[in-house]
Length: 417
Ligand code: DSN
Image 1: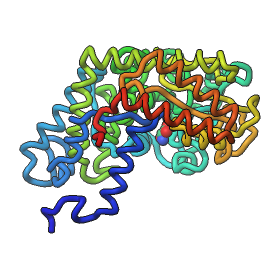
Image 2: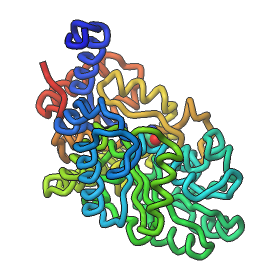
Image 3: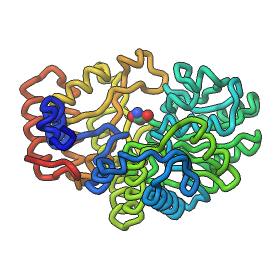
Image 4: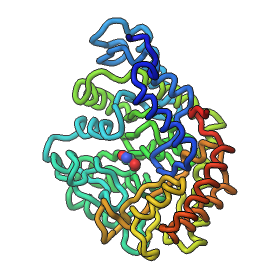
């Protein structure tokens, strides 16, 4: 039984995977937190490393049989240290939210004051938003963006920090299309004795490749996922200054988690190795270039972009002026072969489950090798659909054109029949 193939054992799940392969091939995947992991990363995730328990750290485990796992984890750590120029890396967090919880557990007790960017301004749930454990167990102070230009309001960050004296100050975002000024955040954190935590989940690939400024030297602690622009497995990591190494490691294990997912650790090591190449540097720069061309095309078609454009991998469209809600637009775009997500915009008057915006990004389509010509076509297709969301004939025609384009740009790691 244990030797039988997936198709034999479970044809229903095998069919779901086959259909998902087709979907990931046939459509333009524009959700900015998604990507195509490379074939080597996928191979490591599905390897025998899955079968091993390894609680503890290399050389200090609670299980025998770590001859190979210790090497894997040491390789991942050393590569990340070299790639980002950090003192220490912990590669065991299961994903971004556990990585951030590990950071809280390393430095805070329940009730302590922390600060982060509010979710409606483009922050993350785990930066202290009220429905998250981080908003319930800590005294979470939330900063936002300015009403006029939607850029981070550093006057507000500084005055809230002075007033509340947080232990941790989180910076980093999930829906902010501009460069994060880590130096400015560091100055504010220093002024009030806070530890600055840079959550670079969305931009870690850009940072690794120099396509976005690095928080290293500004933030004492850096958290991230590994599957977004970094193009690795679904996982998390925490990097930090030497002085925080013990606290971070203890917080992740035994504080928060049990055994690390060793296949993921191996895949992080592979992603780090790939991120050191010139090819990856060119890829990261192309993500940013593509985002700018796509933003310019959308602007030329009369779209209102939050902050007026993009200088990273993502674009946030405010559809208020187009008189179509984000969800309706996102659903029409999906039918046409463009998969984005509906999203709140700053100071949104609509509810989060039915907001005014669409969030999109270029990491996955850039992994397919698409460039500025394709971005211009994409921007115009998006505009055509959003301006006519009920025109199913138009949507079907565009879906066909997109399928043809996708056939010309195969997705890495996705088998095509
Ligand atoms: N779910 C991620 C995103 O889409 O940005 C953040 O956790």
